[in-house]
Length: 479
Image (cartoon, rainbow, N blue to C red; front, side, top):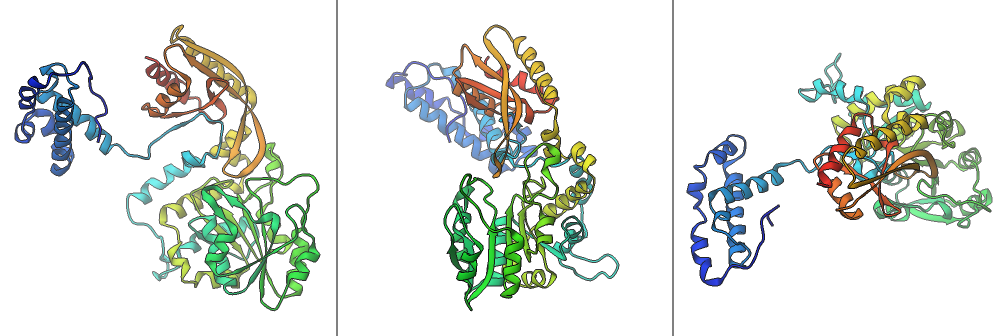
């Protein structure tokens, strides 16, 4: 491991290197130092000795390469200082808090949805001890853990039953493997999607051992295309919502009610994969309509699949709602145990779902919908506050406030922009790419975007308390 820092000066003559090497203290001597003894109170002996050896080895390499210039750079203090930096780097959590100034509300790289504060606070007691994950308190008998969220999911969607797995790709895999293995599933060509991480529907279908039957054209599929493709080997019709793209113009597919009637006539299962999965009408938040889970159930879908960490804004999960016999069949499938969720996921999901019972509470307490509904003037006021704070840092920073566009992200409403305001930065002593890098590496961990040769900080995804934190991060990054 390379040292996080270190002075590099003129080359050291070869005949002076041996005395310098002798100045590197032994491990025994280093373990007696006061700072190292403090490290041993909170870190394992094996870790402390390893970082001390690494620090000593790095100083030794620098001497042999002729990159140190003064004897005082090599003693016990130098090894201790370098070892401290290595120890901090190796023990700092890799997943830590970040400030999202990208304008992407559901930023996959930054953990997608922000959990509601009230939800997180309510989890603390359960996370510190045991909890009723898979046991019925009255009878003491074991129950299926996914039943903990079944009642609230059926209430919000109108479905007969529900289950939960670890993401929507797993939900797709389980449904196809459990209901259509070795049989045919008919899908429109325009819905053979690929989403992030090279997840492709045909490949998942192959893993499930269901046989894909493509119908229609890329832009248009008719009900008659499905009708002609049905054979004695057909198990299901499947509609897939194109979450991360749109086909516009001369395009069309049959409505879900039409597919449901066709499926019933031929005793087939109708699967509706909604991707992001809206539980409420997004038009009330100023967004274009997305398919609503309840409407899919009402239109006749036997099973509806959707994500838990996109428009629901909870933990990563794949949710399956629909007819009770089909859900029971999926619960018994061997894959279910491999892709089930843990207690933290279910705790976050249950508490987050309760917010959807009350639209006003959803706007007020759910971070995703609060960011969507934020009046533009409120975002602009936050941008002005950031501008003033940055201007106070001095003339070495150029600051500009302008209109911006934020996006929902994570494959949800890919073409729909949300009006926003951004602060653009340039520093006289640091290039734009380097400034963005320093902000990411800063203790505040600020993520931005680069546009028009500026570091852009979009204020729709920033909170009021984060404004002074960003100011100090910029101060450190441009020092």
